[in-house]
Image (cartoon, rainbow, N blue to C red):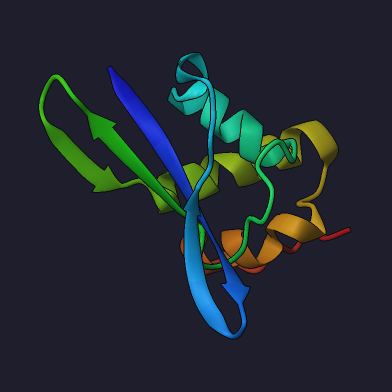
Length: 103
C-alpha cells in the first residue's frame, strides 16, 4: 500500500523552512491526499509544496507531486468548475499549465 507525505514550505525571518503536514494514518492514501489538498484541509500549499509517495512493503519512495497536482486540478474542475486561487501556483508549477479556469 502506498502512503503520501505532504511537505509544505514557509518562510521565517527570510529563511525557507519545510514542515511535514500532520495527518491521521488512515488519511495518507492517494484519494484522501488529493481530497485534503483540493478542499483546503492542507494549509500553506504553495509552489514549493511536495508530495512524497512511499511504499513500506516495497521499501520505495518517489516524488508524486506532479501526479497529485494533476489529480487535484481535475477534482477542483469537476467539483467547483475552477481551480481555487490558493492552489494555482502549486498546480502551475508541477503540472505545467496555467490555471485557465481561474476564479
